[in-house]
Amino acid sequence: MSRDTHPTPNVTKRADLHIHTHYSDSTSSPEEVIAQAREAGLSCIAITDHDTIDGIRPVRDAARGTDIEVIAGVELSTESGGKDVHILGYLFDDQNPALTKKLSAFQNARLERARQILEKLKSHGIDNISIEEVCSRSQSQAVGRPHIAALMVEKGWVKDIRKAFDKYLAEGQPGYVPKWKQTPSEALQLIREAGGVSVMAHPMITNKDALIPKLAEEGLDGLEVYYPNCPDNIRHYYEGIAGKLGLIMTGGSDAHGKAKNSTWLAKVTVPYTVVENLKTAAAKKG
Image (cartoon, rainbow, N blue to C red):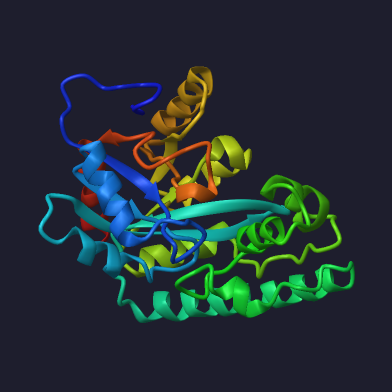
């Protein structure tokens, strides 16, 4: 089902359901996202910034006058057993008070974490990165380690972003600060209460397969089966899990603009029927 690995014949309308903007950790503006989506011939995109929905309305504004449908999305950070588990939410009410309040708390926690990381880096001699510079990298307060890593590269402390993580920012390294924790179950509940549908992001990276049946029992709606640079045998494996559990099989590029060179917008797409399946699931919750 992906453009690069699994094209589906006789399907004209296609969607990329995992796209980031500069409202979180991508370099792409709303206008650039829409331009890339038009160039790729997409009919639908989902904006799934990390722990923020601030980019949805600007992308919808940029899409005016085009045939591109922009659906509400978000990628929520959660943790289970010491492992990051990302939950994608779709088609929720982006004015839901509980959702907006929780996302505001997430962003404040991200900002405080960034401050603590910078303090740790200062104690190791990296003393010329300010919180204002970090915040300037995002159009919201959804700042994170990638923003700090990019500044470390620009200021000559490391040669690339991967080295910044390996030497300073990854767990166990001198600049690491743990995230404010939320469980996957709490994320499912938050999305459900806002009228949306939930999908486990990139399970082939998360590597917490034993968690999938449990979350399915708790209301998980889908599994991101189609993901960039994923071998066919791995894709087939997750197709099998999703089919067995009755989960919607979704996919997308996880595009981050120039911040992630291993993928790009529309590298992986799915038929519009996947969007229709998500809409059907959301309607049942209403």
